[in-house]
Length: 407
Ligand SMILES: Cc1ncc(COP(=O)(O)O)c(C=O)c1O
Image (cartoon, helix red, strand yellow):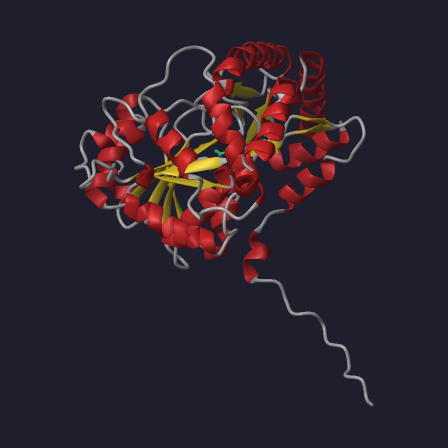
């Protein structure tokens, strides 16, 4: 019998060519000894309440074997959906379980939104600079991403949102800039969503990490006041709110939620069916018990104290070593300090490569721009490393900057 001549394997989908080399370099940097990684958005594992979570896990399997070890409902455990609806309801915002979909963490919410809203080439108005993971989630649809600039004084977003399927924002301590969007801007975004028909995605992993003061109301809440409620009182407004346990407690459970109008929840549920059938029942049951036990509230003060101190350490080191070249604001919350070079010719993609040689890994701004053109910014994380490492990371980054500027 003649064996068929081997053929080259089928090609990868075209969008893979659009991803950047920097992301691949990040992944490789994880394995280099003595590298200080201030690129990622990682919590410090020392804040994880592992004994309490271990006990909750054991009890969950013993007490709920069918629910934790079997397939579960596509849209999430009814008890968890109800708990999320109750947690986010207030005098100003009435939510029912129909407003809630449980997701396999925040990233799945972003992915599903792309699946249900984007046809190839559709327009997104993305808060600029934009969270890299969101750009990654939507890249297969080849969207056109318009820049939504929230730090300017302009409060009319109708032009940039008109014709867009949705606007994407991280109003609480944005990734990558750490900035807090003020209430006036939030209201203007809600008004623009209502007048243009664009959905308004409010991605909120970092709202629990507020070091210096209270937050403005969410756009979900602000929009409820100007949106008619559905027949059973459910929220029907334009905001699609994304939450996650990842930065509030632990990322490993991969538990997140979407809060939105029931018709949006139904569409996302349909998309989830083709994605993972259901989020882990064990992890959902654990999330129910975590919420009931108030574990987030128990752990939050420790997290805030630790991360506030690290933020201050990083900013003091930046002042000492990087102030000749960069500007930054001290973030009021979240996980990142955002630096912009005073000289726009200072190319942070180049700095990133020299910094790797100096054994510090940072995030250059180009990865937070859908077009990859913004090349004079840097995102630095202050939550994962202790203070001595943060201090040393800044010394290394300063050495790398000097080297860049003397070549
Ligand atoms: C802005 C933003 N959205 C969503 C996520 C996704 O987080 P997870 O999938 O762990 O919930 C992250 C994680 O870093 C983030 O920074």
